[in-house]
Image (tube, rainbow over all chains, first blue to last red):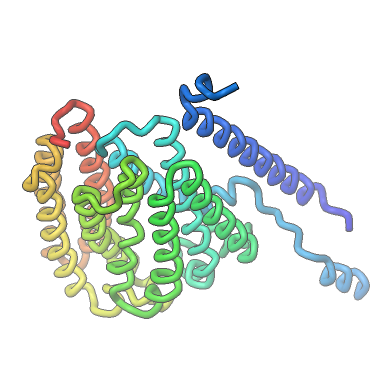
Amino acid sequence: MALTPEEERKRKQRNWAIAGVLLAFVVLVFVVTIVKLGGNVANRPL
Amino acid sequence: MSDASTTLEARPRISLAGPADFVALLKPRVMSLVVFTAAATMIAAPGSLHPVLALTALLCIAVGAGAAGALNQWFDADIDAIMTRTRNRPVPSGKVSPQEALEFGATLAGFSVFAMAFLVGYVPAALLASTIAFYIFIYTMWLKRRTVQNIVIGGAAGALPPVIAWAAATGDAFAALPWLLFLIIFLWTPPHFWALALAGSDDYARAKVPMLPVVKGSRATRVQILLYSVALVAAALAPFALNLVGPVFAVTAAVAGVGFIGLAAVLYFSVETKERASALRLFAYSIFYLFALFTALAVDKLIGFAPL
């Protein structure tokens, strides 16, 4: 089924928004992990 | 001709909703008040939560509140379509389908609770989940269309964010101050919403929502608003009386409280032609009042006055 140009445009906008939110979530989890580990990152057994 | 119409009917609906429509589903203005009360409480709470974790907790509260708003708009689309104030919302205006609103709201609700649990703590996550569930199942689905006490009991959901914020900052869900802040917002909700309902009671009557002005009339509503305002101002003075906050909060609660009771009294005595204007003035002032009170809560802590 072919989408109208307007449907296509809105779908693209939604996809980009979802991608942005997911990327932000990944960054958030990474930053929180670093914060929670704190100085212990340097003190772990090698 | 008939072929063309058959093709049109058979074509599945493709969403024309953009990101802005989904943002509108989150009720950003309601969300801002929720986030503000939570942020001020987090500042006032003892302990030293890392700023990143504090912002994460606030983000989870904001998304959770937004999710509850989206689910509310999914369930209440029929009411929203009738009321002038809400008929341009994304679902009744047709920009977002009810199915999309449901999926969006449920996904965000799950995400916010999951993120709160694993990034901040299980206690605030459990409180956030309870708040969302209370707002959707108890308020939206059960009380709103059935009882005149709908927003009184339902107000508990909007009053919980300070408790969630406190629990995020300290891990403690049973401290006195956050529950007093809960009580303040709980008592603030009825005069806030009934003032709005007085100004637009025709809307609620057409939608068959049993708001107090529709069921009991204007006079009974104005009496209730005045009584709740007095109780609210008394509750707002309690944290200082119990030595839980500093003088900035106490002065704000007293001064802004006089204004609140004053405007409620003006509404009580207003003649029919002035009632709508008085009600809208109280509604606007109530928002300012809550912002002022929670600003004072944070200021007390920031300038070192709060005895916490």
